[in-house]
Structures are given as C-alpha cells and as structure tokens.
Image (tube, rainbow, N blue to C red):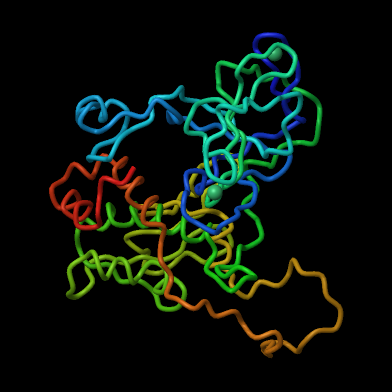
Length: 342
Ligand SMILES: [Zn+2]
Ligand SMILES: [Zn+2]
C-alpha cells in the first residue's frame, strides 16, 4: 500500500491505497445524471496518457505529433496536461482544499480549468476533482505534485489470482450497465482490428447482443471468416480455438490472460466473468434454495428498455489509438463509425 504526499511540503494527501489497473471506464463521459466513484475505496490507479488542459485541436497538433503520442487517426483534439495522473476515490483524499475559481461544470467540477484542489498546508496545486454530472467521480493527482510513500497494509491483490465476481450487464435501475458499455466499446475496437475486415462469427446470447450487433453493422456480410469466443481461466479450451479470444484483463496488473493460440482481446475482468459464468451463484451465501436446474422466477430478470449500445466515444477513442487504424480498411471503418470524437 501507499500514501501520496505533497511533493512541496510532505503533507499526506491520501489515505493508504493499493494500486490497481486503470479502470477501463476511466475516460467514460456518457452515463447517468449522477455517477458514483470511479475508484473503489482504498485503491489508486495511474493514467499513462496525458490528461487535462491544455487541449489542442487536431489541426494544431498534426498527424505526426499525434502519432508520436500513440494516436493514429484524426480526433477532435488532444489533451497536453502532464501524463501519469494518480486517480483515487474522492473520499480517499486528505488535507486538500478546493480552489473555487477552478470549479467549472454545472453541478460539480468538470476539471476543464486545471487543478482545482490545493494542498491545505502549503497551497500548492495538487489535483483535479471531477464530480460533475455524467462523469465518474474521481480525484486526479498531478504526477509531479505528489510523492508515493510505501506504507504497511493488507497485501495487494495477487497478480496470479484470476477469480473475481461477475458484473451483471443490467443495473438495478433496469438500464444497461455503463461499465459494460465502456468495456464492450473498448474491446470492440480490438476485435475489429483483429478481424482484418472479414465477417466475424459471434456465439449467440449475450455476446451476440453486446458484440455481434455492432460487428454486423461495421463488417461486410457473408460467410464468417473469423470466429470470436471467450477464453480464460476456468473455461475449457475451446475446440476449435477461436481466431479472436475474449480474455479477462487482470484488475490489478491490467495484464491480459494469454490464450494458447489466436489473437487475445482483453475485457474488463468482471464483465468477462459474467459472460463466462452467467449462472455462477457460488459467491452468494444461501441456505435452502431451489433444486439444481430450477431457475428463479422471482424477482423476474431485468429487461432493459433498449438494445445494448457499446460506448461509442470509448470505441472510437480506442480505435484511434490502435496502430492498425492506419490500414486503409480499418481507417475507413473508423470514419464510417463517426471518428474524430476525442
Ligand atoms: Zn503541501
Ligand atoms: Zn452538471
């Protein structure tokens, strides 16, 4: 575990926190009116990409400079803030004060004016709190403004542990899970790149509802030339092996599980677990219960009022950052899907 302290005066600015991978939905900007915390309490993540103002238009950045930063297709613009921001849950900050004139947004802070939190002891600008509507709430510490101090605490999640609970695709409100929309949107960009532009056969059920519809829209029709399937810990090796394997992304390290063969597309671990083991009730303590093979009908399963839509902005954001997007066929799909969003 670690505590982050002010680089200027040494004051502690966070509670003890354990490092986890950057959540796939960290840059999601669409969602419900009021969003919860991005980070679990007691955790932190590092965003390697520059984020926060200044923001420069694509026409001012240019293709070569964008490619040097890992962006290979035109986007509206890029942030040129410092890379390496440290994300924590707002409740895990300590000893900071708000800089009122930097709090933009309509019902909270959108983070568009630069750091809006200062060290309470020395006044240094240290972080940006984002908690406006439609944004996941988080505090983004500037990498250069803090120092990471190791502290004793519970061991971090084992990098070799590949078991987590599944995340249901429908939230208790009855709407599709925002995290599912983010995870599928990002994974879809990778699946598309791995398809080489050929039709992809997607298994029925939830995979077809979440991945299949968009792939059918973007890829040509015709006999499927590639196959997509889940692969990962606890699943039997698919036979034959799919051309494209959806594998879990480790929530602490961010590493993708490696399939025996084929292209691996990483997916949010809890989304993957639900897809792989949709009927796994083992983690819910219960006494009695229904006989094996009998399904519950009370409460009724949640049915969202609309078809599943992957997060389009994250889909395009990811596609723009894949080197394969420089290939004409994929660039054409990027443009067809709308491109130039972020
Ligand atoms: Zn300070
Ligand atoms: Zn608002």
